[in-house]
Image (tube, rainbow, N blue to C red; front, side, top):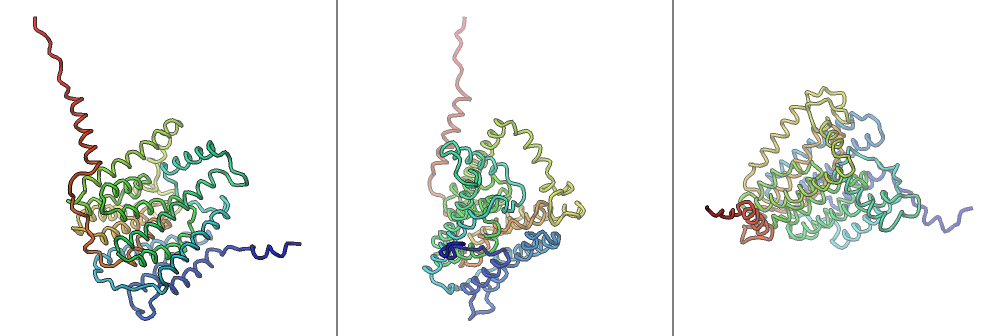
Length: 430
């Protein structure tokens, strides 16, 4: 017979459908403005749950092609919403239905609860989505080895890799939450808006669906902190370059360079190149020491998921569709990425947020490995669009003086020049 006191600790986690319904009800109660039914904020809040039916179909393994079609249509809506945001200048202040302290309490309790959910899920219950990036895979393996050498294998049924994955995922989600709060406080000049975005990030069912997927949340965390540091081009470049180690954030580079054009673009580019090259070099060195560099390169170059001229082999909307139809979609996306480098110009902070989100959403249209499920890449950016004020005056600051990176770069160039052009000793005649 079970101990009567155990009944108070017999928790049952809701399934995906139940949590999606509960989160939608709570989101409406907290953020829906019932006195302004036709406001853009209300429409954004309702449409935020647009992708849920498609993801539920995929999680149940039923009607897969219909699920990917649903995600494709929902992604097209979010893409157009990001472009429409470029023209939305007037943004009335609409406060949430709960004050700052209440939302802070709800955010904290949700984060702690999600930590318990992540630990209670076994490795077999996780739903790995897509192919992991080589950079992140090697970083995670290295972290696992360091933890095992330092603390030894953990007690219990879970492995060291399990705890490393859970810890890294939780850290990334916490970084997203803090970045949303900081952006609202510093750049929106409204701490309540930042806390509202953080609360809605945890309430959105997409976060719980892929709670332990580091590949989903890490790029968003780095890009958000780059936005938080947008008035420091070098720091922003370092963060975006680090995010580009997972490949796809690299496609946001034209947007960021255009944003800083004439106001720190060189510093941003130096920071970007420094961390991007460093992360790829470290990964390449580790793979080379393990004897896997050649095989990994060959495997990556042969993938049809990111090459539209090859027959797709992964599960996606393009499964069963002739490969030739993916080429014009890819060409159109590439043209859009190039256009973001010149339009609009100059760019303010709202343009940077909306176009970065649009670039990440557009990847889902042609990527042939479960494209459409990578919602956490751009979800925090959509939340910033929902709660942002007028940001037309948020521009990169004018460059004054030199920073440490610029001075170090000039010194390295001067040193290399002296070494290369060292004068030859004179040879005596006779």
